[in-house]
Image 1 (cartoon, rainbow, N blue to C red):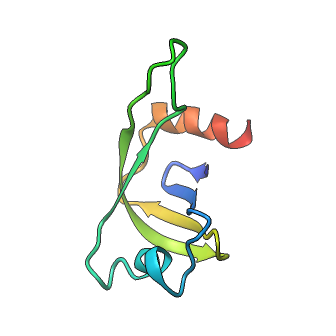
Image 2: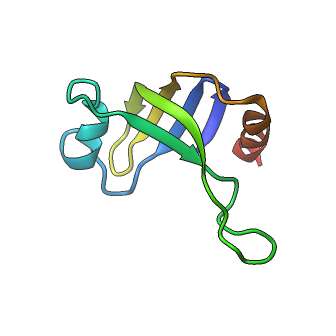
Length: 96
């Protein structure tokens, strides 16, 4: 995943997702089916002591665009800008 702005979230689906059926289609049609996409992030899976880290809710996403299949690359437009302290760290991850 990468972040090009604090209002846009780029995500790559599971390898089996495709835009014409199953999960992939549910992402593409989420507005028509009244499904809300709620986005959570975490910097890494475990801390320096090996403990699992929690996720942080960054808001609701609305489909901006997508491309590809198996996996799909999806850009979600966030309903609220990502807080600066989260976006600053997330932006570092996207280029690191």
